[in-house]
Image 1 (cartoon, rainbow, N blue to C red):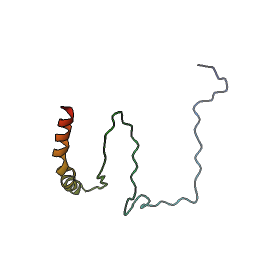
Image 2: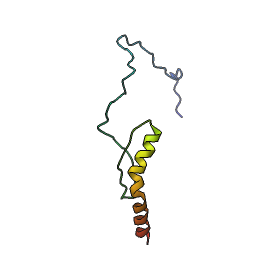
Image 3: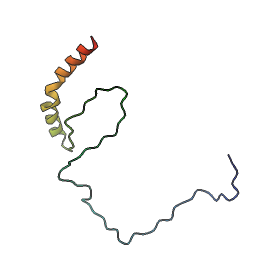
Image 4: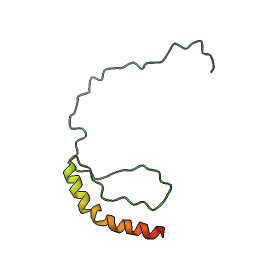
Length: 85
């Protein structure tokens, strides 16, 4: 480590009041999402994403899952098994 004789401790940024600030309780409340962004890194290709659901209703999420992925999961497992053989 290099000595620094001018070091005065950890610098703390001074906070300045924002006189134009007013809280907005609905700032992140959206009626409809038109876009979903994903940032991920995969080593193996072939991953497919579909049927994204954003909700806070667990029962509806389960119902949606059964109606979408629930229908195709058996076929996907069979294909995975065939690919391994």
